[in-house]
Image (cartoon, rainbow, N blue to C red):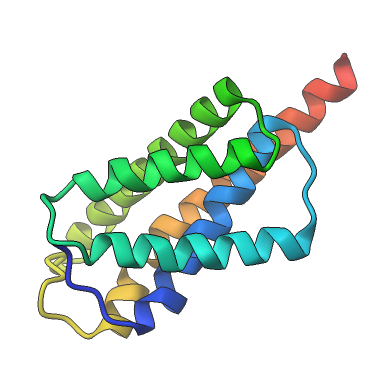
Length: 151
């Protein structure tokens, strides 16, 4: 079970879901209604917070959230296979970003053990992984646009 503070819904969970959902839509080459996108991201951000609060083994929450995102993307009109690979690709990019973030923190001799740390400081220290995810989505979006122009 992860111990999160309520402020982390707004500082980490919702921004993370905004990026993941946006990346899924980019990879699926689908447009989206901004209002629905924001509502969906907020609901999934709150949902991911609540799932992380469950008394389950570490890592199981990731599987539950992944299956939920795939299911919701199917409901939103993205085909099953596209939903699966897009969600897994976004999670892989997020994990790579978090690994790079830990490397960056270790280069600056900043501890990345976040068990007893202020939630705002924790959110600031984990911000580079979201920035890496954002930049990756921008790059993917440009590649997708170029591929659409070629076809």
